[in-house]
Image (cartoon, rainbow, N blue to C red; front, side, top):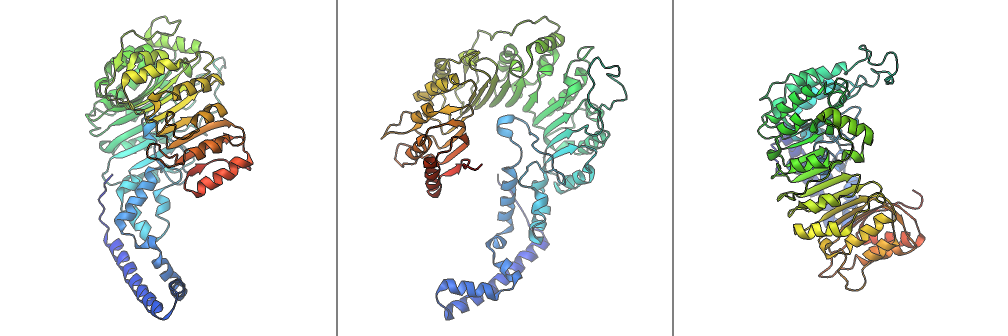
Length: 541
């Protein structure tokens, strides 16, 4: 991202003072060099002569141009903020106590407390304040902080997450048979929510990407927002338990949710969203979605309706799909779908027979209960570069590697990133080995494996001589649980650091859990010294 930054008068004066003092100290250094040898001794002599303030001015970080320092600030925040790549709209990660920064390890309010120069730069750079996460509770004075961030963000587009908490407001949930179940005096929303949402609505013309997560009811302020107030909105996500969970009478909260979504759709730039199954499976909702405009979609719906929707999404570049049967109890889900559609449903719908081609889809993330074979049989994705597959219990529905490999060959795509999370040993490892052995996977540069693996996989990934058949371009490898014998892991890693013209070097290796052996530990220490980026638990972790 290219950013323009014009330092204010205070910053110019301060940087000018730094430059003046630095030149004076430099003259002292040159005089010391002329009368003192060796050079390192002259530098040490100079540093001892300087006052603590002058020593601070000598630090290279204080001699960077404000434009460069600003770009460093932004990059540090960008790398620790929202994860827009794999999860669609903004994802709330933590609840800051004195800040609403979206990132946990980097915060413009922290940057502004380092020194006067950094504070001046941070406060005069609106881009640093244009992303935030709001944790709305009675325990935090959020309004003054939010007003400060909105003011400091100037007129830049806003990306934010709103998370409503009823902590301290709502007693323990009572069961449906409790005599006071549904008591009208139980709060349905946080009283502070109206004030916060109203403040955000004053800047609705700047909303770019929003994520609202209400505990129970939608805010009436948001419901009554007129169309045409969101000229630059690109991405939206709305969660509300009472709005999407279909109570009795059925679909009681759905019309209000549909009204809010229609307002979101009215933005001419709307191209990305996250929707829950209750909303998507209601027929009117499915029909009014602007499918043809979507480039990013995060969907939870039946596979049958998913394929109906995909036929209307020619411009889709990122798709995250969650099979509701993988995350919901089947009987409850069937009842919920019956309430939403008015039709009896006692079994999972089948995938339609007609194939689908999505010419621009680059990222695909699938979470399914059964194997995704039936989906791969009907999909053709020529632009696919990143694929994530998650399936629970492979022994209940064992994936067929040939179906997946035929899908890759039919698509003719160059897959670069592959995330494999199919649980159920030893089937999961057997399936993965069969997939990785194929030349169709030779374009992979990043591989992440969550289920437990053994030396069978590590032996496959170990290079012998000039063999290039298995993942010749692999540069980044992440392993979940490793059940390894002494020497197998380090042997695999060492075999992939040899530089040749045809083979890529393994640069990053991350291991979450493994069987620590002294031979491997010493080998990993040597690889780290040679420059490999390692994140491997030590024996004492």
